[in-house]
Each structure stands twice: as C-alpha cells, then as structure tokens.
Amino acid sequence: MADAVLFVILMAQGRTEWANQISAAEWGVYREVITAAQARGIPFALGGAFAVASYTGCWRNTKDLDVYVLAEHREKMLEVLVACGLEDYYSRLPYDRWWIYRSFRGDVIVDVIWAMANHRAQIDELWMSGPEIDLRGCRVRVLPPEALLWDKLYILQRDRCDWPDVLNLLYAVGSEVRWDYLVHRIGEDVPLLAGALSVFRWISPGRARRLPAWLWKELGMAPPGTETDDAIKRRTDLLDRRPWYVPYRREIAPAA
Image (cartoon, rainbow, N blue to C red; front, side, top):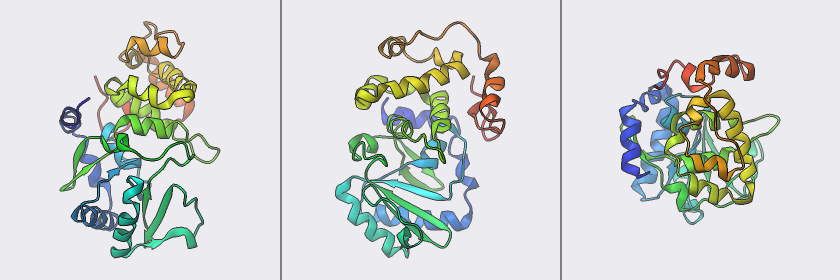
C-alpha cells in the first residue's frame, strides 16, 4: 500500500492520540533526539511501541524509543545521541553491539538499531518505507507493518514474547499488509508466520477472512471457516485475562 494512503487511514482512525500518554520528561528527550537527527538529514524510522501504536492506536509504554537506521547512518546517529547528552547503556547492562546501540539519559532510553536482534538481516530500505505520522508536532516515519511483523515473529523468548504485538498488528492492519512481499522476505522461515496466523485465525476468524485467500494456500493452511468473532473475548482471555488485544483496549473502539 502506498505511503500516502496508509497515512490517511491512520489519521482517519485517530491513531496518533496515544502519543499524549507519553510523559513530558520522556517526550522531552525523544523530541530532542528526533529533531536533532532530522536537522542533520539522517534518514530513520521509529519502531517498537511507537510503530505498533501508530497502527493499533494502543500505547504500551516501554520507556524507550527505537530508532531504526541503515548501517551506513549508524555513526551519524550515535553522534546525535552524544550531542543530546545520552550515554552508552553498556556500562549498566552489557548488550549485543552487533545490532544495537543502547543509550540513556536519566530514566529514558533511546536505542539505535541497524540489524535484527537474531542477526537474521541488516536493516534495509524495506524498513524505511513506512508511512509518516504527526507525533506531537513532529513529522516522523514509522516502520511499515511488513518489517514489524517480520521482526517480531522471532521474538518468542522465555522472558519476552512479541507475538501479542503480532496479533494486534494482524487485527488492525492485516488486510493492508503486502503479503506477497512479506512471504518472500521471510523465506525459509515462513512456517513461523504460519504459526502466528494459525493463532490469529483461532482468535479472530472474521478478521482472518479479510486476508488474501491465496495466502492460506501458500502456507499450506485451510482458509478460515464461517465462524464469527463472537468467541474473541473468551479466547483472548484464555491467553491473558488482562486487556491486551486491540478490540478490548480502552484507547480505541472496536473496529467494525
């Protein structure tokens, strides 16, 4: 889907109001980094909670900002962090420098990311192709849903699982995803995508039917049946009784 069309959809659904929930202290640091990077002409896109909220309207405060860049712009972005008074987080907690630079100022964290955490791939132009949104007066680009889904499918760890984000993205914008492109990029790992779609179909069969019919065949899966979404609440509660799924979050009304 074209950048401009997806931007219109997001704005029409009021999906930038979540940004008002960011505290003044956190936003002050984020805004300083964003405007400094833009002033230097560094291409970047926001990921993590900011990108997910842009598509779902639901804000989950992770107390950090994920800034995605091409590897060629990494050093320039790190210079921005230093100029903004942020320090390397490595002395507090060592991390894998192959794919990320973690920085902090006070209790606020800003991460610069140029590769996937599992070393699967470097950040490329796909990640820079998402829509631009208005974020409290700052015009910024967010990751496209294809990049978010590809990245988050692999985060399935004992102490952290991003599949709730995957399911929320599928619910919110699944019908707008460039599925042919995403399947191609995932490549031999496509059974992982099939696993997530199987869960999504179980939770929201009605929404799953909005996905292209060829996708189910491509993944070797039966297409969703005629079951309605009446069981959504019961099934999501089986996974987590807290309000984690888009239709039951207070920030936005259930989609039609």
